[in-house]
Image 1 (tube, one colour):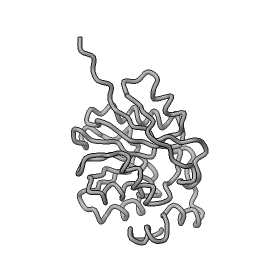
Image 2 (spheres, one colour; image 1 turned 180 degrees about the vertical axis):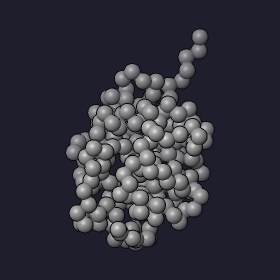
Image 3 (cartoon, helix red, strand yellow; image 1 turned 90 degrees about the vertical axis):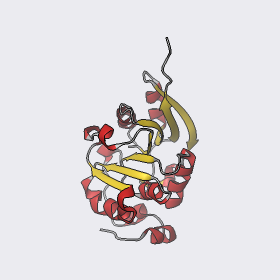
Length: 202
């Protein structure tokens, strides 16, 4: 496995490019694509505008590029990842942050989110690049009442799926280049802000 410090990542490029060079096989069933640079991760985090010290859930944490940016900014991160092959990389990447970083290897749909998140938590994630799977996972996360809002990267079709028949408010706030990921994204991507629709008063 690849071992490299966070400082070295910033200098020589992202972990994703090194995994590509080693011939790592991504899983299409997980819609798996990895963010290539820490700069791209920091730009997404700045766009999210979450309060200092907020509790953040990341679904599909992958190689930890976004996770470490979130923790480096002083937030508490709960990184959930399904692919056991990434256990060593992700846990090592987040180990320097101690108790501010928690890692769980499982399908997020089997995880007790209510038991692990605080009220007012945020979802900050690069979702699977499978439109239906991304939409399904986002809907699932928002069944947890402790998740208040989110910022996600999804295929453009996911935005349409989320806007139909849910109580979520979905707003496109940015785009992101397909080349920001390895492998490059197969379709146009959107950065979405997601919130809850205010309850109607009778």
